[in-house]
Length: 228
Image 1 (cartoon, rainbow, N blue to C red):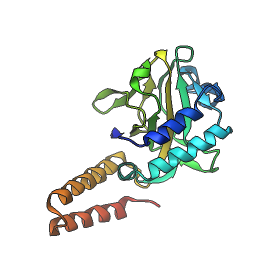
Image 2: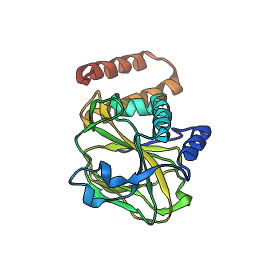
Image 3: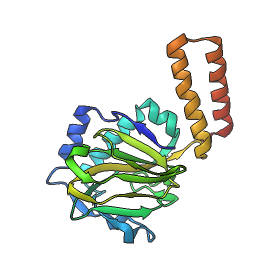
């Protein structure tokens, strides 16, 4: 499933992020982090992981997603791979069709993270660049995503996806992966839909006996399916 997360970053956090990604940001060839299958497809720049800018940005992004209730409901995170940051422009414009590695090693935490869910957090507004859509091959065909700065998209780590060529301006984004407590995308979708509809029922009718019973079903399913 593809989930659009709105306003993950506040305007002030977005301002801080853009300042850290300014002219003095230490960009390196993005191919340094690509696996054998993806390296031939990758032509972008990536923020040096060991830099002070990367450390500050990682803390900012992690704090933002951890406070977002929709992110938690959709991802049910067990582990989060340390956020990375990339830049696409006409000189380094694209990342062709690829599948992310199934298990990745985080330099920040020294953990191995299974990539159940991929996340892209957009840091440049669509008007700042042409092209640069995230294209994800979903169950119902290819879907293109280009969101406002501060918004994010979650999509299955199993999907073939690409970033289309940037022909003007610069596309800035954070990207990372989540190992979910619930490994199955289908089960996560059922839990997410149930949780979101429970919220709507409570907004409309309050805490009814039916809402309480359905909440019990949600937690019993989560108890059955979750690994912690």
